[in-house]
Each structure stands twice: as structure tokens, then as C-alpha cells.
Amino acid sequence: MTDPALDAAFIPVSEANAVTTYRPVVVPVEGRPIDLAVSVSAPATGENLPVIVFSHGHGPSNFVGSMYGYKPLVDFWASHGFVVLQPNHLDATFLGLRESDNPDAPLFLRNRAADLRAVLDNLDLIESTVPGLAGRLDRTKIAAVGHSAGGNTIGLVSGMTNIDPTNGSVYGEIEPRFAARVLMAAPGNGEDLDGQAGDFYPGLKGSNFAGMTPEALIITGEKDAHPFFASRATWRGDAFTESPSPKTQLTLLEAEHMLGGISGYDAAETSDENPERVAVLRAMIWAYLRSALFTGDTSWRDATAALAAHETPIAEVTTK
Image (cartoon, rainbow, N blue to C red; front, side, top):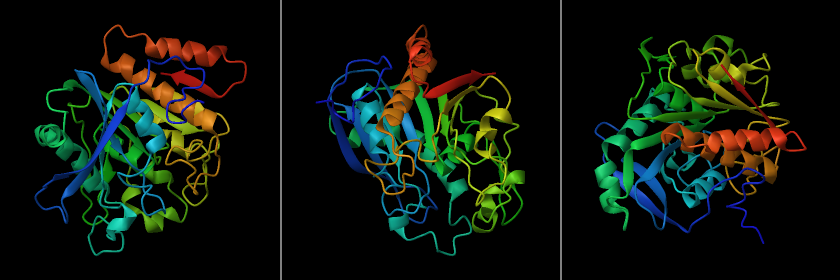
């Protein structure tokens, strides 16, 4: 029987290993309403391990949009050699802060980007807290990956900018400690946020990709469109079309916002459940990160070749 956490469909990947998960690592952050909690998933063995800092989405569930979610991705990447760090952003539903009077609520976009930097600033604490992890991280090979609101978060540490609706200030800058970046189903240009979402999430109205200069993989679902956010069906692809090159886009055919079910095993909010799609997606991200982080690695070349050769089209790769 194939372990659903390890399936890579037809994409070539490395041999899987056992995974250990430890949480929470509590990171004190000055000025934050509550301390930052981080979930850590790591291969049980291995040295000089690359790192993924993963930013979760917003969403309606109590725990999917938090450090407890996205197990179909996290389990796979950890089993194939990455240490995955999942900060618990302040918009996680179970924290009860979405309806607070905090000016950054309900999405806490500015704070989300600060969370990623806090993780990087506290790698010593994370390593020393998690049993058996000390000395095993390769701090020159750290990737930032996020979905939905988490995609906006990755943009904010990659040169994309937002406008703070409370004071009009522009924020967002390139965090050089991230050596690779992946944005999944990220919100598009703020100017085209013309649905009801603009009233609920004014922090997204100023999003602009003109300064997002680092290389990145942008992942979109072919059918990820909803008038609640934007009347333009291609809005979720703006991180690719509106940012400077070089960029790579992976478009999952027939996929909607949850890209086949990445946020959790059998998660109720998945409208397009497709385990093969999830298996391909996570394997393609693994391959992209391997080649982006390791000089001479051919994983991305091999993965794109396998994708192109597959008899049933499931995704398309575009570059600029």
C-alpha cells in the first residue's frame, strides 16, 4: 500500500525517510500580542538539511490555517529531506484574534512577514529546543513557501509591497536569507481586488508585485477564480505576470484554490479533491527547491520532463 503522505505520482523524487514532528517551539517576539509558536517537522536522520519556512493560509477552519495544517505537503517534504518550520500566524482561527481591535486584523499581513523573519532570527533556539535537531540545519539553504494569504506573506519577504490601510505606509522588502521562494494561489494585484473581499481584507488592496525581483515559483490553479475577490479570472496569477523576470509558473489544470487538497487530508474546504494533483504538486515543489538550493541538482529538469511526458496532462510550466 502506498503511504498517502509519500506518494509523488509519476514525478521522480528521492527515497523517503521517517519523520519526527515537534511542537510548539515557543519564540518570544517583542510587541507581538502572544508569543510565536512554531511546529517543526524533520527527517529522523541526515545532516546539512535544507529548510522550508512555510506560511499557512487564512481560511475558515479552526486548525487548517495554522501550524497544524497542510500535512499533505509538510509530511512529504520532511520525508524527502527538508526540515519544515511552520509558524503559527496571528490569524489562526483558534487564537481568537481575527475579530480583535488590532489594526492588522483579520489577516495580520504585516505581522505574518515579521513572523518569518522571527523564525530566521531564532534558528538557534529552534535547533536547541527540538531533540536531535541541533547542528543538522544548512542555514545557507532556506526556502520560503506559502499558500493563499501565505503566498502574500512570501511576496512580502520577496520585494512585493502592500499598503497599510491604517496609515498609508508601504511595506514589504526582500529578505536575503531566503534562497528560494514559492507562492501558491497568492492574492493578485490590489488594484484589481474588486469583489466583496476588499471590504473584508483592506490590507490586500495595495498589493503590488513590481518590486518582486528574486526568482520564484508561482503556482496557480486553472480554475482558481471567484468574484468574491476579483472579476478577472487570472487574478491569482498576478505574482507571475506582474512581477519582473526571472519567474516560473506551474499551472495545475482544473485545479481550484485548494489545489486538489493541500491544506489537510480530507479537508472539508477542498472543492477540487484530487490526490494525484496533490502528489504532483508537492513533488514538483520539492524538485524546484532542490535545484534552486543545490548547485548542479537536476531534480527540476527531471520533474518537468516527467510532467511533459505524462500521457494525461495535469499541469503546465511557463517561464519568463
